[in-house]
Length: 391
Image (cartoon, rainbow, N blue to C red; front, top):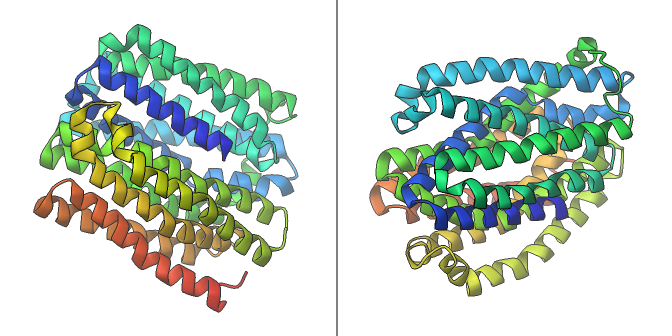
């Protein structure tokens, strides 16, 4: 949780500074590109990050298993990036600037480096060394001084600051994994990966569905209402991420412990109670101080994004119930139920967002986010309490 919270804080501070160094339109286009990069990363993982957490503790060839996952992920990344580039004129014409060689290099560099860093962090958490993952991700603070130096370059400066920081993080990750006796040998064991293929592919579909709202909605906003509105959404969502990270972090720890055969029923209710107890004061703090926080960007952000921020914040309480339920079915390897839950959340969020964005503007995204989480959390809560999902 400390790791995720620190990462989120640095992200918030990064965009706060960027907002004062470049135009709102520039911020909107850059965040749209980063959202697209997140989708490419999610597609390229093939669900292997969840397999790393679930099966690494029992792997007979840990080095070969980890190395094979990295090799496959990077190969798929190249294919996915190529397809994205070809389809860019049809997917999002506003991102066509990424086809120029300098932006293309920065963009693919960001995708490769964030992919590797995420897998490195997952490996450290899988062996119960989240403290080392925190050490690696604390390097993200370097993007702040780098942005101060290069932020005047606009989109180029923002991507340079990010790429250099993630490159240093990747090198640090290699060192940390080596010290923990992970990936010391260059052996690649495809056989180990093949054993987990069904679980990986099931989680792959689930992950793509789960990340669809935050990767597709920014593109929809830019193409329907413009880059300025996307900047407002991205900043509000970045602040709300402080709350989403609580259940995500609790669920990540719950998944690791479940993979090490800890009692699932006890862990489930403790995790849910812990997440909600932490969220309650955080939600209250955003309600009271959220508009002041947005003022740090500018009065226009506070006026345009505060109500959206409130709705996203309230949805975190219901999201906690959903993500704990998701973790239960992941530990149980119930891939079908996992996909049903995530498809319900994402389908409702994207469908309602598109309808309400056209009807009432940007605030419609917030109502869509809140309503979809309320509806699915009601079903998830009932399944946990009634025993329909056996813990």
